Image 1 (cartoon, rainbow, N blue to C red):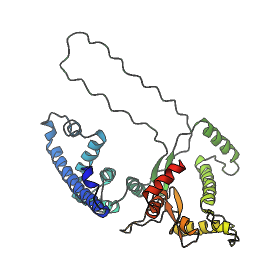
Image 2: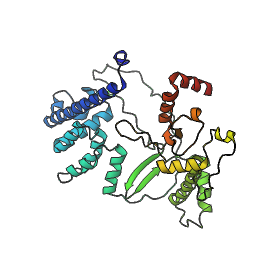
Image 3: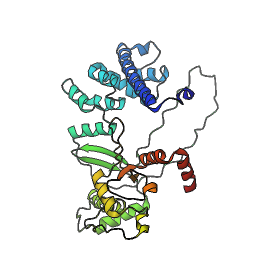
Length: 344
């Protein structure tokens, strides 16, 4: 199959992907409807399984997480047919259905499904948290024990007659209790932020908390970190976008060497970043903007190597991926491959 796609034009390839996704959504909706019926009739018992979950694992060979999501979505769709139609149209994914399911009632189903259309999992979590805000979490710092080394289980030799029973499967691995850099919406524009600090950072936090007692008498780490982040963000914006509360007036170039320099003047970087909203400006043929805020670079509409000119109108913000795409269009893939090899 991959070989048959090599010569497919880009537009046709993208159209086929969209068609396949639409077909996949329709199949997913049909599958959920059938799973719901199997569950309602308890047909899994006839297949030698004690529950729908066991049936999905042992007979349909779903992974644990996939089995759980599909069963939850199937049961919710049986109670609320609007969900099935939204899945069929590709407006809700299984994770969104799973997040909505415990909150759905006959009165709010249409409203919640409509609000969650085409939302990411994090956006759905935020939507639900804003509807039912949770109380603020207490501030605390605690020490985390070193993870224990996992050793292989000792298998003792069997004594006595051999058992005819099939050995029970090993228990599923326990997920880590702390995910790196975890955030969780609490509603009312508040978020739970959780991370693991090493000994050095812990010591720095304790010292900062002590030094900030005059400004933050209760020693709330959330307030202290908010100030630290605001300061660091201002520094990062100053370095990247030349943002400052007292900008200097732009001075004219006085020598050919300045004109030919790759350095983009601060006034231009500052104006471009504010105009573009500090995010990528690439827009697809269908009108969708990239919006990425990561790995931003200043991109010349006409390659600087050809013009040697910096101007506000001729520069936009692009993420690295779309900036590299522009370079491949301007200079060709082979030239860019040589450039990357020289850079390394």
